[in-house]
Image 1: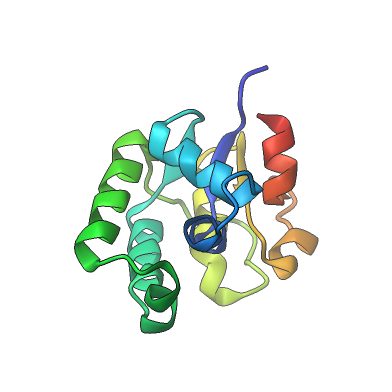
Image 2 (image 1 turned 90 degrees about the vertical axis):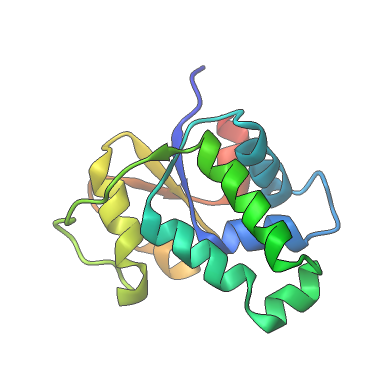
Length: 140
């Protein structure tokens, strides 16, 4: 079965980087992004958000990565990603700070958003799927 075209929410990336459990779904997803084992979409706005959150002092104290290490990880992720400009989605995200994810979902109809955000999981856009990390691991 062909893997779903994924959009990886920032909370999944952060969780996968800070976990100490290499078999956790979020860690497996981050490993997959780094190795290019499944197709995933990335926009410049989402990449910027990844970097900003990874460099927050509270998050940085958990993963212990330098700014240079973070940039290296993000460069590898970018090389393996399908870069897309989002388009204006017909629906508004339940949290206005997540509208860029809805817009990226609108850019490719077959895309699936992978998130741990319960608000997004329980209020998906009508035309797209929003699933958990565990559900995505079952798909791939």
